[in-house]
Amino acid sequence: MPFKPLVVVTRKLPDVIETRMMELFDVKLNLDDHPLSPTELIEAVKSADVLVPTVTDRIDSSILSQAGDKLRLIASFGTGVDHIDLASARQRGITVTNTPGVLTEDTADMTMALILAVARRVSEGERLIRSNKWSGWGPMSMLGHRINGKRIGIIGMGRIGTAVARRARGFGLSVHYHNRRRVHPTTEKELEATYWESLDQMLARMDIISVNCPHTPATYHLLSARRLKLLQKHAYVVNTSRGEVVDENALTRMLEKHEIAGAGLDVFEHEPAVNPKLLRLDNVVLLPHMGSATIEGRVDMGEKVIINIKTFADGHKPPDRVLETML
Ligand code: 8YV
Image 1: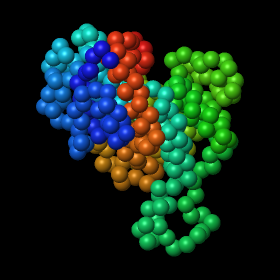
Image 2 (image 1 turned 90 degrees about the vertical axis):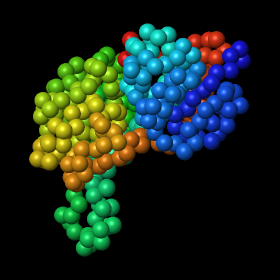
Image 3 (image 1 turned 30 degrees about the vertical axis):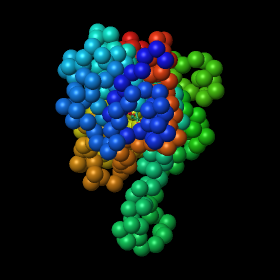
Image 4 (image 1 turned 180 degrees about the vertical axis):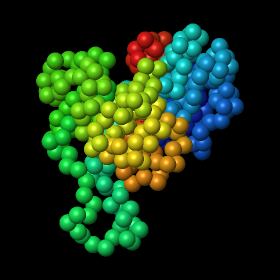
């Protein structure tokens, strides 16, 4: 390898990945896995040739302005890149890569888990048993809503949205979607998916809404208070993308007033903080950003990061480069 970079990794990664990185590069690990403080992050960008951040590292222009000339690559461990100021990185000649593709299936699985959990009251049922308050079966107890035969509206028909659509078909849902662009006719045909150019019109007709678009300036609060009001009273909202795409306070107000049936949330606007009002509601299922959290997925992500760094260090363009124009 022409260049053996100093790679600073901000969080603990699978052992097999850290070991491989140490064989290939000079590596500084975060063995106790604490989220880096701003001071530590500045130290990291100053010393590294390559930074491997995660979603918990906010790499904005003020952090990047402190980076030395050494920092050439940000090889992010994750697909979403909304924690990185891409324009600022480009201006400084820093390449940014991510790990697309390898967490698609796991995140789609978690989307289905949330849909089933909220519509069939899975978490609520378990809470009932654990609280020792279950008095026995009753014909009218713990009734949820049937999934089969309902309509799912997917916002963002990229890799994950498409994987959700495939699973949804298996559960007997009819697939609808809103996307910046209509997907290829072959995919649309395979999924028997209906395209809605108007998000507003789609929202008003769906039983389940699944948020699967990335968070960008264009999708911030895409599900605004006004749009959430368009949903039917029996509708569910599921989000495994980014909290910022949904106005969390507006959603919480609607859930409190039962203006929609429920929500399944794996992501939040101000992670790790969660709106305390959500914690008191039974019609929500709350997960701690674990959509891609499988052992296999983390190893796959790590391998992608290694390929990106190695390709870059060998003097070539890394395969998973991200440009702000791609979002
Ligand atoms: C990751 C994610 O766990 O990759 C993403 O965009 O949201 C998560 O599934 C996390 O971002 C890793 O940095």
